Length: 463
Ligand SMILES: *Cc1c(COP(=O)(O)O)cnc(C)c1O
Image (cartoon, rainbow, N blue to C red; front, side, top):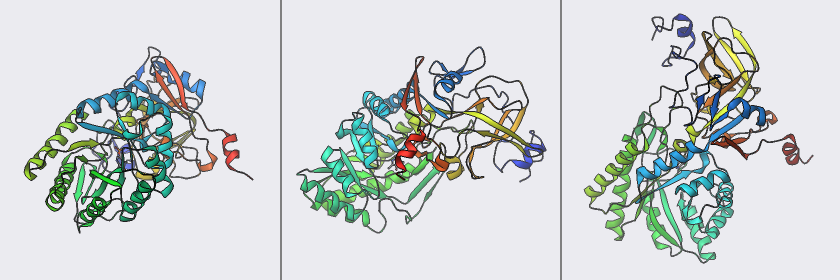
């Protein structure tokens, strides 16, 4: 497809990938509420604030790169999800998106439950005060130690993922004198990402037990035989960054089909069904996610219809949004170090972070937007690539963005919608020091994860 006729002109057309928007935004200083945290605003001076605090002042106090997490935004999204699903459903926040003790406290106060998928996440959940019965443990290869830790703590459910694990959980529960509630994670032959979903007969992936071929039904048989396990439901998780509920529709149809088979074979109606997470957010202004009420209404209708069709009582529904809660709640603030113009191509703007604090662009070709936040500018838009400081040419934060042409070293940029899978996937490549997370609310800032120091690095390196 030729882009030469695009209004943005041949310069952008030649160098932007197919399908990418090619026109610069009409106002480079505008903050699109779709991607910025709730309380983000430009002040009279033109500088951006979040939670009533200037990002420049926060950068001054806490350094850059810096994650700024808007507590009001986070809590508002928790409430929106909880209210949308109502009292006869459960919202489990997927802790892998971002977890800290402060976040666990907010979740507990806002009435959400919590998914964890490792011993480390479980420790943070318990240390943050989440009641164990509101915690679910996931994972395709939970260690015996993790299972022991979870059962001993009394987690509300373990989502079992393999035949070996069924035996392992049963043995551990028996040894601890417990009857452990479990769900069985099934793969329904649906993969959903953004706008497409693919329904397949077979699943070629490491998670869950396949419905097709009868593995899931066999898992049900095994769990029901074990006195130390209480089978409470079926779990399905179909993908990530999903904008469209048609994949959930197919998944719900197949899960309810299994519930009906279980009733027919074993004479039991399981009380719970979990449709997983994966609900999408806006990373750029091009994305249009649904709101929680629309999603809740649609999922309830789908499950209700399928259950009526199978003459089953409607089980208690749960969902597991991670990204859709914390993703839009945070932004990452960076300082510009160098600006390198490649004439006829684009300008590389290097910042003091990169794939160590946001690996998603390198890993998934994720798209983000970026804004100049320490001031406004009337300069012309300049096609830019915001890159990090790591020794990799793939170390890209924002692949294609328009920044004002006068961007210079010392300016502060912020990338919105970095709350999910950025700090939680942060790494020490090049012995980078992982950035802090500062929670802001009503003009007050609180460090909830401190910046890593060289001392931290040397403590691990025992010489
Ligand atoms: C990752 C994951 C989630 C959360 O996914 P999001 O895209 O953050 O909503 C929920 N459930 C399970 C089982 C997952 O693996």
